[in-house]
Structures are given as C-alpha cells and as structure tokens.
Image 1 (cartoon, rainbow, N blue to C red):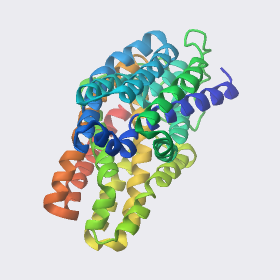
Image 2 (image 1 turned 180 degrees about the vertical axis):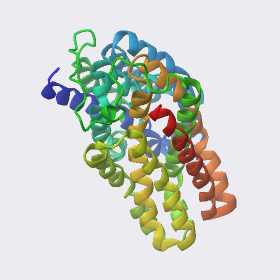
Image 3 (image 1 turned 30 degrees about the horizontal axis):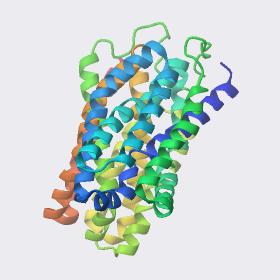
Length: 399
C-alpha cells in the first residue's frame, strides 16, 4: 500500500473519528441542559446516563478489538456509524429518563467499538508496525472534534432544538460517516507495508521484525502498567475537561480569563501532536510518553505554587501532555507487544481507563468542592505514579 493511499486512509478515518467524537463524547456539554429541561430531569441525570455509556463502552472494547483483529476495521466501523445514528435517533425520540438511559446505553455500545481504540486497531491491522505515523495523523484531525462539535451542536440546538440536533448528528453518521468508513481498505487486500525507516523507533530496538515482542517475558506486568497509565491519563483528561474553568477560578483567575485560558487546551493538544509527528517521531514512543506524563504534574505544581499567573502555563502543559498521551495509547501497545492481537489487547487495557473516565467528573468535583485549587494534588500524584509506571517499562522495552 503506497504512501498516497495511506494518507487518504488517514484522512477518511480521521474525519470519521471527528464525527464520532463530536456526536458522542462532546455532545453532553452543549445538549445536557436543554435535554434535562425538556425531559423533566436534573442535568446531573443526563451526565449520569453519559457515565453509564462510558462503562458500557469499557465492557465492549475487548470484543470490538477482537472483531477488528479478525475481520479488519471497515465492517466494524461502518456498523458503529449505524449504532451512533440509532442511539442519537433514540435520544431525539426519548420522552423520559427510561428512553434517555436506553439511548445512552446504545451510545455506549457505539463508543466502545467506534472511537480511537477501534481506529488504532484498524490502522495496525492494515499497516502493522508501520502504523505509528498513521495513528498520529488521525489524532491530528480528530483533535478538532470539540472545536467542530461544540459550535455545530449549539447551532443545531438553536435552529431545531436539542432533539433536532440529535437527529442532525444521526443524519451525518448515515450520510457522511458510513461512506467514509465504507471506503477504508479491506484488511485482507491490503499490501504488506514497507519496513520502518532507519529513524523509526521500532528500528531503535534493534530487534528483527520476526522476533518475539521485546516484552514477551513480562506480558502481564507490562499490561498492568500500561493499563494503569491509560487509566490515569483518561481520569485526568476527563476531570480537566469537566472542571478546568472552575479550577482556574479557584486558583485566582477571573471567570472570563478562566474560559479563555481553558480554550488553550485544544490548540496545545494539536501542537503537541504536530511535534510528535515531526521531532518526537525519531524518539522511542516510551520516551515521548514519559515526557508527556511529566507535563501535567509540572504544570500543576507551578499553578499550586504561583496561582493565577501560572494558569496559562498549566493549561498549555496539560493540553500538550494529554495530546501526546492520546497517541501513546495507540503506539505503546504496538511497539511493546507487536501487531498480533493488537485490537483485543488494547481493548482489554482500556477497560480501567473507561471506568476511571466515567467517575472522574464526580470524584474530582468532590475534591474541588473540599480543597479548592489544592484538588490538583490528586491528579498530580496520579500523574507522578503514571510516570513511575512508564519508567518501570524501560528495562522491559530494552530486554
């Protein structure tokens, strides 16, 4: 499969991922309040339904990964577009909390088999060890999901109400998502990719492609450590997504400044992914992940020590670290275990991450209520523990 074909695959899959993220993970931020008012429930009830969807997605991840390992990503991802459309249509038709929760459960099935983990597994199924650049490429495109999704959801809600917005997203999955994923290459017809170039990190391991994965002697330990790192990453990312403006206010910034500074997270994520695609691409993914894992604790330490003047630095460091760690969730299992059984293994490792993500807004919100800006000690200590786990992986990566 030539480079031009791979670029088109990345463009199609990245655009489909932008649609999937914008219409699921980023949907409640704009539509939870009008949903709650119309259905006669409290706004936290809508977020509770979203948390249920995240738990369902955690349970479904390993099964979706196995399906992609066996059949390739195209049929699985096309089916998830249909599931996304059905769940969004169910929300549009919901008349009470039962219908709302049922629609979000179905959304959880779609999220568990149609977001980044499924996309990463699809690329590994197509390109094997050469998938690192493609994984970075789709995260660059889908990194704008909130930038596209939030304004579009708000516009549709203003024009047609929240039910019309859900119906609009459902139509986009049928009219745009299905063709994009349907045009992906078939896994059984994909040509074997060329071997990694000399500057690729896989070559730095000096292990021949046919040899056993470098962590074959410690598969369980490596899986546990990676699962912990991913759980911390998702917990911190989701906690900040839910509470960052409030946290910055508690650190001494005004509401207007807090909102403006929080908007720096998205550009910082994309900038860091561009750095990963360029300069950091020459480094082993484990080293990139270690640098990224240190970013949030460093920024949090500055914010707790200096208060408001360090708010911009904290926001940029958090966004940059999170941007690279998103890529690491795809590349580290590949470089440490190899492409065989990638989808099922990654789906299993992401179960704790999805569960942590489901509870992150509530737990960090409680910490923020009790401790104010000092709640950052929670994510700082977790981040340092994740950094320690990544350092423990170093001798295994070199074995």
